[in-house]
Amino acid sequence: MKKFFNEFKEFAMKGNIVDMALGVVIGSAFGKIVSSLVSDIITPLISLLTGEVSLTGLKYVFKPEALDSAGNVIQQEIALNYGNFIQSVIDFFIIALSIFLVLKILMSVKNKFETLMKKEKEEKEEEEEKKPTQEELLEEIRDLLKAQNEKKE
Image 1 (cartoon, helix red, strand yellow):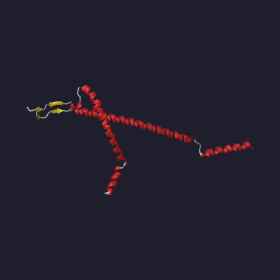
Image 2: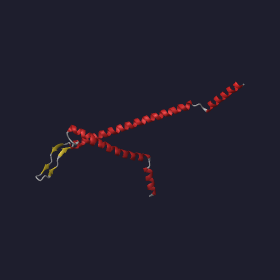
Image 3: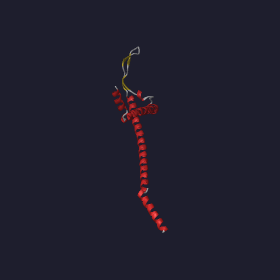
């Protein structure tokens, strides 16, 4: 039993698993944001064009449902529910666009950060190159002492 828990701990703490779990949590929250964007903002705008409150209610009825005199359904309605499909397509495109924009922003920030780090590294290397080596400093001190001794004589 202890071996099982050790193996599970090793599996759960691997970097890829933790990254994946984090991605799932962030993806879930991002999905809620996109769903809200679609249902609360975009769908009402599209409803203005179609005259419908909800796209999911759009359908083409081939054969209406048949009712008896008591109001019970004798035969189910046969309809093509294209509104739900349209809503799903819109959701997909908005999600894809949102992910694209977020990734584009993240990659832009990452590239700027890498460029900044590269520039700092190059500046640091230039400063290191400008600094005289210990040998050069010793030679300069020797030459100064030599010149000073020649002036005294």
